[in-house]
Image (cartoon, rainbow, N blue to C red; front, side, top):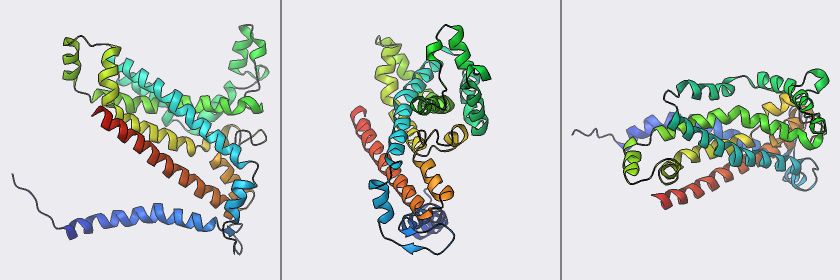
Length: 297
Protein backbone atom coordinates (compact mmCIF):
# COMPACT_ATOMS: atom_id res chain seq x y z
CA UNK A 1 0.00 0.00 0.00
CA UNK A 2 1.34 3.39 -0.95
CA UNK A 3 1.16 5.89 1.89
CA UNK A 4 1.07 9.55 0.96
CA UNK A 5 3.71 11.29 3.04
CA UNK A 6 2.97 14.93 3.76
CA UNK A 7 5.12 17.22 5.85
CA UNK A 8 3.77 18.85 8.99
CA UNK A 9 4.19 22.27 7.41
CA UNK A 10 1.93 21.24 4.52
CA UNK A 11 -0.71 19.99 6.96
CA UNK A 12 -0.42 23.22 8.95
CA UNK A 13 -0.83 25.30 5.80
CA UNK A 14 -4.15 23.61 5.01
CA UNK A 15 -5.41 23.67 8.61
CA UNK A 16 -4.39 27.27 9.35
CA UNK A 17 -7.15 29.08 7.35
CA UNK A 18 -9.90 27.06 9.07
CA UNK A 19 -8.22 27.53 12.44
CA UNK A 20 -7.98 31.30 11.95
CA UNK A 21 -11.63 31.44 10.86
CA UNK A 22 -12.67 29.41 13.92
CA UNK A 23 -10.68 31.66 16.25
CA UNK A 24 -12.15 34.82 14.69
CA UNK A 25 -15.74 33.53 14.86
CA UNK A 26 -15.58 31.87 18.29
CA UNK A 27 -12.74 32.93 20.59
CA UNK A 28 -12.50 36.58 19.56
CA UNK A 29 -16.24 37.28 20.22
CA UNK A 30 -16.01 35.47 23.57
CA UNK A 31 -12.98 37.54 24.56
CA UNK A 32 -14.68 40.76 23.46
CA UNK A 33 -17.81 39.79 25.41
CA UNK A 34 -15.82 39.15 28.59
CA UNK A 35 -14.09 42.52 28.23
CA UNK A 36 -17.37 44.30 27.46
CA UNK A 37 -18.75 42.82 30.67
CA UNK A 38 -16.24 44.99 32.51
CA UNK A 39 -17.60 48.20 31.02
CA UNK A 40 -20.36 50.59 31.96
CA UNK A 41 -21.63 51.03 28.43
CA UNK A 42 -24.95 51.40 26.64
CA UNK A 43 -23.54 50.01 23.39
CA UNK A 44 -23.42 53.35 21.60
CA UNK A 45 -21.82 56.11 23.65
CA UNK A 46 -18.61 56.39 25.62
CA UNK A 47 -17.75 53.38 27.75
CA UNK A 48 -16.26 53.37 31.24
CA UNK A 49 -14.14 50.56 32.64
CA UNK A 50 -15.59 49.37 35.97
CA UNK A 51 -13.81 46.05 36.44
CA UNK A 52 -15.93 43.25 37.87
CA UNK A 53 -18.76 45.49 39.06
CA UNK A 54 -21.19 44.06 36.49
CA UNK A 55 -20.34 40.51 37.50
CA UNK A 56 -20.69 41.39 41.18
CA UNK A 57 -24.10 42.96 40.49
CA UNK A 58 -25.16 39.93 38.46
CA UNK A 59 -24.38 37.48 41.27
CA UNK A 60 -25.43 39.53 44.29
CA UNK A 61 -27.78 42.35 43.32
CA UNK A 62 -30.01 41.17 40.45
CA UNK A 63 -33.33 39.77 41.62
CA UNK A 64 -34.10 38.41 38.14
CA UNK A 65 -30.79 36.70 37.34
CA UNK A 66 -30.80 33.64 39.63
CA UNK A 67 -34.44 32.74 38.91
CA UNK A 68 -33.57 32.80 35.18
CA UNK A 69 -30.67 30.43 35.88
CA UNK A 70 -33.05 28.11 37.73
CA UNK A 71 -35.58 28.13 34.89
CA UNK A 72 -32.83 27.49 32.34
CA UNK A 73 -31.58 24.48 34.31
CA UNK A 74 -35.19 23.33 34.73
CA UNK A 75 -35.63 23.36 30.96
CA UNK A 76 -32.34 21.50 30.53
CA UNK A 77 -33.37 18.94 33.14
CA UNK A 78 -36.69 18.22 31.45
CA UNK A 79 -34.93 17.96 28.11
CA UNK A 80 -32.37 15.41 29.31
CA UNK A 81 -34.50 13.42 31.77
CA UNK A 82 -37.79 13.37 29.85
CA UNK A 83 -37.19 14.15 26.19
CA UNK A 84 -34.09 12.00 25.59
CA UNK A 85 -35.40 8.77 27.22
CA UNK A 86 -38.65 9.10 25.25
CA UNK A 87 -36.68 9.72 22.05
CA UNK A 88 -34.52 6.65 22.70
CA UNK A 89 -37.55 4.48 23.49
CA UNK A 90 -39.37 5.60 20.32
CA UNK A 91 -36.22 5.05 18.24
CA UNK A 92 -35.92 1.48 19.58
CA UNK A 93 -39.58 0.77 18.83
CA UNK A 94 -39.31 2.16 15.29
CA UNK A 95 -36.14 0.20 14.51
CA UNK A 96 -37.70 -3.01 15.84
CA UNK A 97 -41.30 -2.95 14.61
CA UNK A 98 -41.43 -0.63 11.57
CA UNK A 99 -40.23 -2.12 8.29
CA UNK A 100 -40.01 1.15 6.37
CA UNK A 101 -39.28 3.74 9.07
CA UNK A 102 -38.13 6.64 6.88
CA UNK A 103 -41.56 8.28 6.60
CA UNK A 104 -42.28 7.92 10.32
CA UNK A 105 -38.90 9.33 11.37
CA UNK A 106 -39.35 12.22 8.92
CA UNK A 107 -42.78 12.92 10.40
CA UNK A 108 -41.33 13.16 13.89
CA UNK A 109 -38.61 15.47 12.53
CA UNK A 110 -41.09 17.87 10.88
CA UNK A 111 -41.51 20.25 13.88
CA UNK A 112 -37.73 20.80 13.92
CA UNK A 113 -37.72 22.35 10.45
CA UNK A 114 -40.76 24.54 11.07
CA UNK A 115 -40.24 28.20 11.90
CA UNK A 116 -40.21 28.93 15.62
CA UNK A 117 -42.65 31.78 14.95
CA UNK A 118 -45.10 29.33 13.37
CA UNK A 119 -44.73 26.89 16.28
CA UNK A 120 -45.09 29.66 18.85
CA UNK A 121 -48.24 31.06 17.28
CA UNK A 122 -49.70 27.57 16.86
CA UNK A 123 -49.23 26.70 20.51
CA UNK A 124 -50.40 30.11 21.69
CA UNK A 125 -53.68 29.32 19.93
CA UNK A 126 -53.80 25.88 21.58
CA UNK A 127 -53.15 27.45 25.00
CA UNK A 128 -55.79 30.18 24.56
CA UNK A 129 -58.73 30.38 27.01
CA UNK A 130 -61.80 28.33 26.04
CA UNK A 131 -63.67 31.51 25.12
CA UNK A 132 -60.98 32.22 22.51
CA UNK A 133 -60.99 28.72 21.06
CA UNK A 134 -58.15 27.25 23.09
CA UNK A 135 -58.13 23.53 22.33
CA UNK A 136 -56.73 22.33 25.67
CA UNK A 137 -59.19 24.25 27.82
CA UNK A 138 -62.12 23.29 25.61
CA UNK A 139 -61.13 19.63 25.83
CA UNK A 140 -60.86 19.80 29.62
CA UNK A 141 -64.28 21.41 29.89
CA UNK A 142 -65.87 18.71 27.69
CA UNK A 143 -64.29 16.06 29.94
CA UNK A 144 -65.78 17.74 33.00
CA UNK A 145 -62.40 18.91 34.28
CA UNK A 146 -63.20 22.61 34.49
CA UNK A 147 -60.98 23.02 37.54
CA UNK A 148 -57.97 21.97 35.46
CA UNK A 149 -58.33 24.84 33.00
CA UNK A 150 -55.75 27.59 33.18
CA UNK A 151 -54.55 30.68 31.43
CA UNK A 152 -51.54 28.65 30.43
CA UNK A 153 -49.26 31.45 29.27
CA UNK A 154 -50.30 34.19 31.71
CA UNK A 155 -50.34 32.35 35.04
CA UNK A 156 -46.87 32.67 36.66
CA UNK A 157 -46.88 29.16 38.15
CA UNK A 158 -47.70 27.28 34.94
CA UNK A 159 -46.38 29.49 32.14
CA UNK A 160 -42.81 28.12 32.14
CA UNK A 161 -44.06 24.52 32.13
CA UNK A 162 -46.32 25.31 29.18
CA UNK A 163 -43.28 26.51 27.24
CA UNK A 164 -41.24 23.47 28.32
CA UNK A 165 -43.90 21.16 26.85
CA UNK A 166 -43.67 22.97 23.52
CA UNK A 167 -39.86 22.82 23.53
CA UNK A 168 -39.91 19.08 24.28
CA UNK A 169 -42.42 18.48 21.49
CA UNK A 170 -40.50 20.57 18.98
CA UNK A 171 -37.12 18.83 19.35
CA UNK A 172 -38.27 15.30 20.17
CA UNK A 173 -37.98 14.28 16.51
CA UNK A 174 -34.46 15.70 16.31
CA UNK A 175 -33.23 13.34 19.01
CA UNK A 176 -35.31 10.44 17.66
CA UNK A 177 -33.44 10.83 14.37
CA UNK A 178 -30.05 10.86 16.12
CA UNK A 179 -30.85 7.81 18.27
CA UNK A 180 -32.46 5.93 15.38
CA UNK A 181 -29.41 6.48 13.19
CA UNK A 182 -27.15 5.21 15.96
CA UNK A 183 -29.26 2.08 16.45
CA UNK A 184 -29.32 1.39 12.69
CA UNK A 185 -25.51 1.46 12.65
CA UNK A 186 -25.28 -1.40 15.16
CA UNK A 187 -24.42 -4.59 13.17
CA UNK A 188 -27.38 -6.96 12.89
CA UNK A 189 -25.02 -9.91 13.43
CA UNK A 190 -24.69 -8.96 17.08
CA UNK A 191 -28.45 -9.17 17.62
CA UNK A 192 -28.61 -12.48 15.75
CA UNK A 193 -25.86 -13.95 17.92
CA UNK A 194 -27.60 -12.69 21.05
CA UNK A 195 -30.88 -14.24 19.88
CA UNK A 196 -29.19 -17.60 19.56
CA UNK A 197 -28.03 -17.25 23.17
CA UNK A 198 -31.58 -16.44 24.25
CA UNK A 199 -31.34 -12.65 24.49
CA UNK A 200 -33.91 -10.76 22.45
CA UNK A 201 -36.41 -7.92 22.80
CA UNK A 202 -35.75 -5.50 25.60
CA UNK A 203 -33.13 -7.81 27.07
CA UNK A 204 -31.08 -7.40 23.89
CA UNK A 205 -31.61 -3.65 24.07
CA UNK A 206 -30.36 -3.61 27.65
CA UNK A 207 -27.15 -5.51 26.97
CA UNK A 208 -26.46 -4.54 23.35
CA UNK A 209 -28.29 -1.41 22.21
CA UNK A 210 -27.78 0.78 25.26
CA UNK A 211 -24.04 0.09 25.73
CA UNK A 212 -23.27 0.47 22.02
CA UNK A 213 -25.29 3.65 21.61
CA UNK A 214 -23.51 5.50 24.45
CA UNK A 215 -21.35 7.68 22.11
CA UNK A 216 -24.43 8.67 20.09
CA UNK A 217 -26.46 9.31 23.24
CA UNK A 218 -23.66 11.60 24.45
CA UNK A 219 -24.16 13.76 21.36
CA UNK A 220 -27.86 14.07 22.16
CA UNK A 221 -27.12 14.98 25.78
CA UNK A 222 -24.64 17.70 24.82
CA UNK A 223 -26.92 19.15 22.13
CA UNK A 224 -29.92 18.97 24.46
CA UNK A 225 -28.20 20.68 27.37
CA UNK A 226 -26.47 23.38 25.34
CA UNK A 227 -29.64 24.00 23.33
CA UNK A 228 -31.63 24.42 26.56
CA UNK A 229 -29.10 26.91 27.91
CA UNK A 230 -29.38 28.92 24.70
CA UNK A 231 -33.19 28.80 24.51
CA UNK A 232 -34.48 32.19 23.49
CA UNK A 233 -36.62 32.38 20.35
CA UNK A 234 -39.55 30.24 21.50
CA UNK A 235 -39.85 32.15 24.78
CA UNK A 236 -39.75 35.52 23.06
CA UNK A 237 -42.44 34.45 20.57
CA UNK A 238 -44.80 32.94 23.14
CA UNK A 239 -44.46 35.11 26.25
CA UNK A 240 -41.65 37.60 25.78
CA UNK A 241 -40.38 36.53 29.21
CA UNK A 242 -43.64 37.41 30.97
CA UNK A 243 -45.72 37.49 32.98
CA UNK A 244 -43.49 39.54 35.31
CA UNK A 245 -40.29 37.77 34.14
CA UNK A 246 -41.60 34.35 35.24
CA UNK A 247 -40.62 32.74 31.92
CA UNK A 248 -37.35 34.60 31.46
CA UNK A 249 -34.25 32.45 30.98
CA UNK A 250 -30.61 33.51 30.88
CA UNK A 251 -30.56 34.38 27.18
CA UNK A 252 -33.80 36.37 27.27
CA UNK A 253 -32.61 38.26 30.35
CA UNK A 254 -29.36 39.02 28.52
CA UNK A 255 -31.35 40.34 25.54
CA UNK A 256 -33.53 42.53 27.74
CA UNK A 257 -30.53 44.04 29.52
CA UNK A 258 -28.50 44.57 26.35
CA UNK A 259 -31.07 45.90 23.90
CA UNK A 260 -34.16 46.99 25.83
CA UNK A 261 -32.57 48.46 28.96
CA UNK A 262 -29.49 49.60 26.95
CA UNK A 263 -27.10 48.10 29.50
CA UNK A 264 -24.79 46.49 26.99
CA UNK A 265 -21.94 46.00 29.43
CA UNK A 266 -24.17 44.21 31.92
CA UNK A 267 -25.72 42.12 29.15
CA UNK A 268 -22.21 41.10 28.05
CA UNK A 269 -21.47 39.96 31.59
CA UNK A 270 -24.54 37.71 31.47
CA UNK A 271 -23.44 36.40 28.06
CA UNK A 272 -19.99 35.59 29.48
CA UNK A 273 -21.60 33.65 32.32
CA UNK A 274 -23.66 31.68 29.79
CA UNK A 275 -20.54 30.81 27.77
CA UNK A 276 -18.73 29.58 30.90
CA UNK A 277 -21.72 27.43 31.91
CA UNK A 278 -21.90 25.91 28.40
CA UNK A 279 -18.19 25.06 28.44
CA UNK A 280 -18.34 23.60 31.95
CA UNK A 281 -21.42 21.54 31.07
CA UNK A 282 -19.75 20.18 27.93
CA UNK A 283 -16.62 19.19 29.87
CA UNK A 284 -18.71 17.51 32.59
CA UNK A 285 -20.79 15.55 30.08
CA UNK A 286 -17.64 14.42 28.24
CA UNK A 287 -16.08 13.31 31.53
CA UNK A 288 -19.15 11.29 32.54
CA UNK A 289 -19.54 9.62 29.16
CA UNK A 290 -15.82 8.84 28.91
CA UNK A 291 -16.23 6.85 32.12
CA UNK A 292 -19.26 5.10 30.65
CA UNK A 293 -17.27 4.28 27.50
CA UNK A 294 -14.52 2.71 29.61
CA UNK A 295 -17.10 0.76 31.60
CA UNK A 296 -18.82 -0.75 28.57
CA UNK A 297 -15.78 -1.12 26.34
